[in-house]
Amino acid sequence: MRKIELNKRQERILEIVKESGPITGEQIADKLNLTRATLRPDLAILTMAGFLDARPRVGYFYTGKSGTQLLTENLKKILVRDYQSIPVVISENVSVYDAIVTMFLEDVGTLFVSDHGGLLAGVLSRKDLLRASIGKQELTAIPVNIIMTRMPNIAVCMKEDLLIEAAKKLIEKQIDALPIVKETERGLEIVGRLTKTNITKAFVALAQED
Ligand code: ADP
Image (spheres, rainbow, N blue to C red):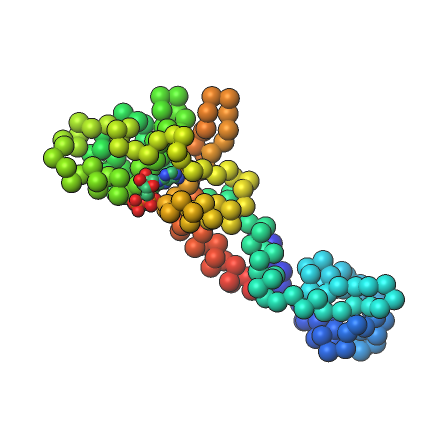
């Protein structure tokens, strides 16, 4: 994601406009003992980044955008593909026992299940596996497709979706992970995994950017 980091001169311009705006480029240049031409790139950056607005014959003024507004604007630029993880996929005839082992070995909380054609067929959460384990069944004998949540009831997202939209799905459906899929003629191919951890990482990165 792009990072807007202002240089000293841009910070100074921002202060001047906050204090004396609306103010012309010429007047800002005077205050800084610089020429209007020298200032042009800085003013362009500040305007494009949304800190300043310019009106003809009035000059520059501070948009008054709060940190939160700028944060929201940045948030809406983050896509799922910027924070995705690698999916852990097992096939549908794998036993519940092996699924549990895979979950530990791969250190993930959600497994995706693919059908014989390699397409998305189901999802397995920790609790799905726990639920299957408290019965008296032989875990090596039950295939995961008996206990998984299956298509078409699976919430998915795509690489190009906004991260915030994927986060909303996680909350609405009260789930921990979404398979990231690619639509093909045959069905949905699993290309990634988006979890609450990915969202948390994006959240922390946004804070550091400010
Ligand atoms: P846990 O049950 O371990 O807390 P989740 O909250 O992710 O984990 O899962 C809750 C239920 O929702 C489980 O039965 C799981 O199979 C199902 N589930 C998980 N992810 C999805 C998804 N992307 N779409 C539909 N159902 C899901």
